[in-house]
Length: 215
Image (cartoon, rainbow, N blue to C red; front, side):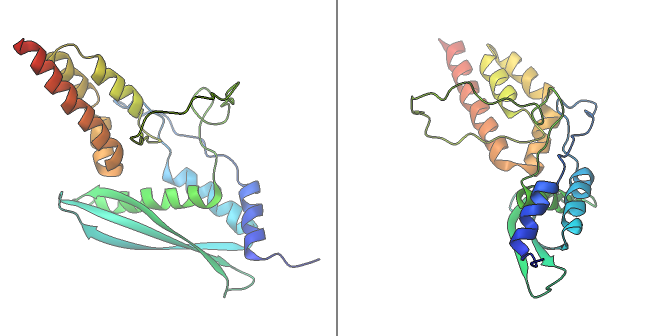
């Protein structure tokens, strides 16, 4: 039997890997979290079964927002030929400057390295993963939206933006921000692009509401 090269092994690991089931909702949160341990269990087992072994190194730096940025570089080694390896880099996360922040950011960035490496399926029934159905047809119209829309596996970003836009008074806007404060704090630590998109919409809508009140 011909010996598989590292890419053939990785391809088989991707086929063998089971989907990662999301965890239970946390009190005060409106999403099912995609947990690091569950992701690691699925990914590592698929890799080991195919003669592959992952290691990670991390680069950390303090940002100007008094948070820590952690960048994960994952190296996947071929056990049968240690000179061969594949690198997954660029997976990053941010954490608070406390005793938990660095570890949380390391886990988050490692989790997404595994997801990127094996293209793992995620989700639970009636959520957004295993039972997702394809669109019945593809629209022939081109999108006129020029700004990219950022999402997050653990936060319903579109729901927050929609609730902000629906606020008809400053009081209602403040209630929305209070309702989603936990999710917003999560995005500040883990997904600044999605957070900035929400904050831009909130700021624009607040200006609009204040302008309407002056008329």
